[in-house]
Amino acid sequence: MVNKIGYPDKWRDYGPVRVERGDFLGDVDRATEFESQRQLNKIGKPVDRTEWQMTPPTVNAYYDPQMNDINFPAGVLQPPLFDPKLDDAPNYGNTGATIGHELTHGFDDEGRQFDAHGNLRDWWTKKDAGEFLQRATCVSDQYAQYTVVDDIKINSKLTLGEDVADLGGTLLAYLAWKDATRGQDLKPVGGFTPDQRFFIGMAQWACGDERPENKRLNAITNPHSPDEYRINGVVSNMPELSKAFACKAGQPMVRAQACRVWRKWSRSYVGSETLGDGRH
Ligand SMILES: [Zn+2]
View 1 (cartoon, rainbow, N blue to C red):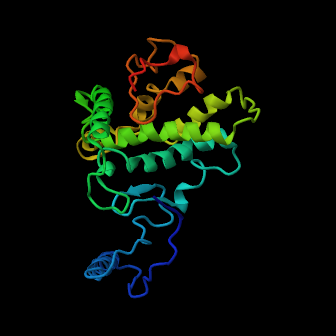
View 2: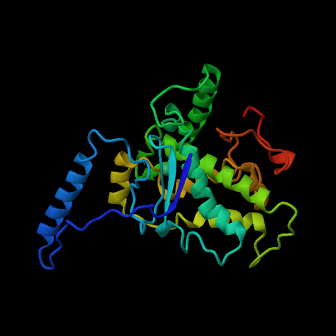
């Protein structure tokens, strides 16, 4: 998997696009024509693997299964998401989980169908694929229960890839953070333990609000679950969170049948009292 960070190696030349103040429609027309021509010019040429699908100021990130690359524009690597002035706990929780999310897309229900070179090819053993489908079904059953607005539930077959990426990505970030800070004596900050601050950092990327009309639209068209479930749906599957906040069985953030697609429960990070049934 290729890591693309910040901005492309070579800048696209927009020289031929004429931009005129006071001619918005004309500007849009000319920009659209330029882009169409740029795409058509690719015909018959090898794939440009250095190309980005997002501009450098974009506050977002993506995984491309056909390129097998993860892309983090400069815009997403700044506060309040990634903050170089902060310590590891909130940064791993926030940006680390986003990096893990994009990595995990390579192994979600769609990305797993592409091989390392970006070709649509089934490279999994039957046993692995069967196990994946069973574990992913746990996730889609979970999210299908969440209400978006009024009587509308999440279409969890549409959101499965993103939900799997959210869960796997947060777990990856947690493990990476534990690994990076091994042997360090991390102190509480602002009354919160390091583990609590990891999860607070993780949750804060999703702060936002939406009108009900937009929630209805997103329920049909957006492959991402609503923000609150992109947090609560994930952490309620993580005994690491239960332990950090001393949640007890039966409380809202402790799911009795927690889902986990990637990596078995780890005894090195969580107490045995919060372990699941060992099925995963
Ligand atoms: Zn995603």
